[in-house]
Length: 263
Image 1 (tube, rainbow, N blue to C red):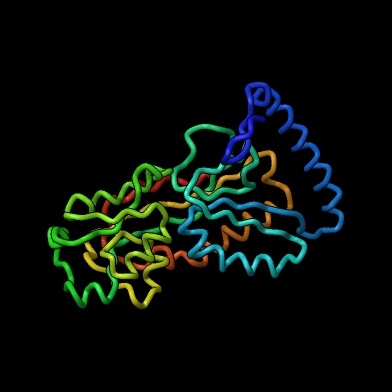
Image 2: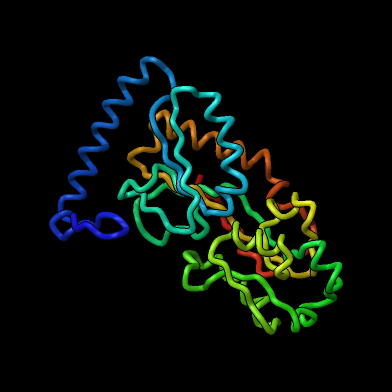
């Protein structure tokens, strides 16, 4: 390894050894799992990588139920705005916005979700309700930082930016929501989070976006009891909470084409 300020990076020699190391690790996991299966309990550690908005604003609370159901299971939720490599064991499961274009991964579609334009009640009291995107021209709008956009699905910020005179950019979903909540200006937010915030109001209902969450797992580990339990929990959770992620029946612009799930 080469030591870097942000962590360790594989050398070329390490890259050559990685496939063999992964095979050995998979075999050891299989042996351990076979031994554990005799007790029929869900135990061990599972790390789940997730987009920061979904992880912080939804999953952090919901995973408590799974933790209570399996006292011997240790869950590690990593809600960061980044892409996780399952082949490098950065996570056991990863929820992503864009489907992978390469790699040996098992992909399943968890749910579609929508985003809308919101403003705080205080901002509306001071500035009124915009009747169209053109009404945003004299105001500050809240958006993301393009250089830190880790997925093509995060391409909706320009819709507000190109209509407003001033832009306040924040790299994280949680930061953007807090900025809108504080009255900095309108912004595009996840409906599942903003719809439940009493101080936020959905404006410009004709402007919206539809995206999808997908779950990735490595084929070598998908049948491990602890990982299978987490996959089943996530599938059930998103199925039960489908309306949470699509709360409005209004037409949704810039929708992602729906493709068959690979489940």
